[in-house]
Length: 133
Image (cartoon, rainbow, N blue to C red; front, side):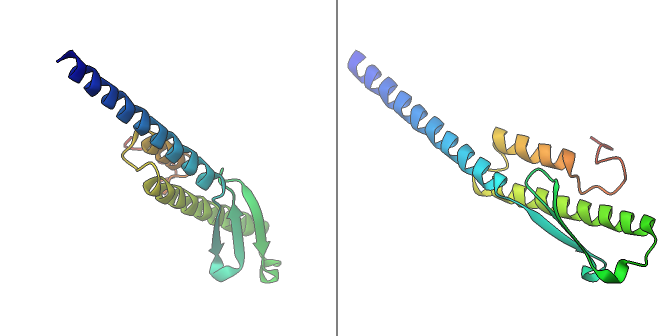
């Protein structure tokens, strides 16, 4: 009888160990996918294009010559709007990567998604998505 209990315990430990290894592998795969993720958004019918890396930092900016006579304040505003759109796209891509790897309902998935949503909220109320949270 004691032998069967020991066998059950060993099976449980082996199963638990395999589960931990699988979750670690999925987390590593997620980290690699997120690190390789970037997003691009266009504004004003393609007159402005902004590319951001996995941390949301601008890595590319294209301004069409047709905006050269615009007031600087408008160009500034349009660049910022387009950058925010690229960052929102980034958050969406990261959420998809989470869903494909660790799952959005896992502790890791919830933490990663929450971090991106906190930084790059799709909320347009101007409070960074903090209202109602």
